[in-house]
Image 1 (cartoon, rainbow, N blue to C red):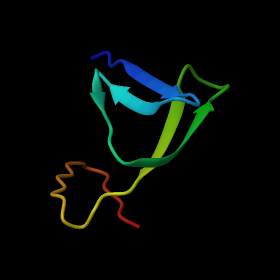
Image 2: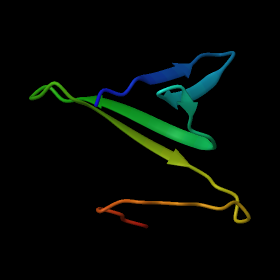
Image 3: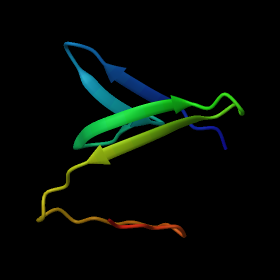
Length: 64
């Protein structure tokens, strides 16, 4: 299934959206284009307030 990624980082605005849904509370990101494949890696860091409910579903979850 194809997903649309939209990353805007200008002087006036900043956001990352996947399929039109914004990812909130992002503090940092990096993008790496891999020369050996047709993939681009997007690493993001975000900060979530303690009182906010968080749901994570992943078969490879790693909490640091």
